[in-house]
Image 1 (cartoon, rainbow, N blue to C red):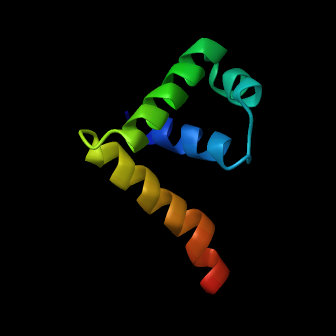
Image 2: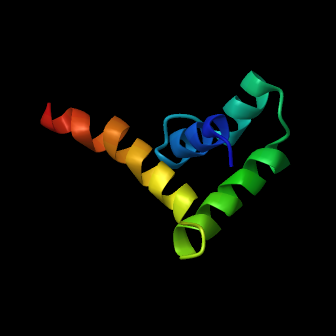
Image 3: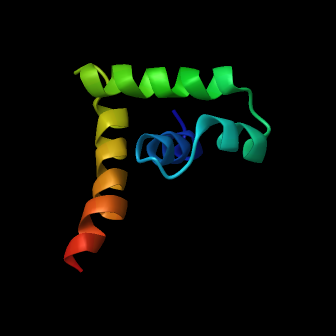
Length: 70
């Protein structure tokens, strides 16, 4: 999963945007975005996909949690 895809999925999971908003903004089908979300869910559950999990968690911590402490 690319960096932009990771960013989009993270924003949807955080409730900052919706599948329909992203679909319109990036001219993607909702099915494509939902596929990325499913890939992300599987990646977070699957020990064989540490790169996505590490990338997602790093971005989540740096954008959602760290600002609370700064």
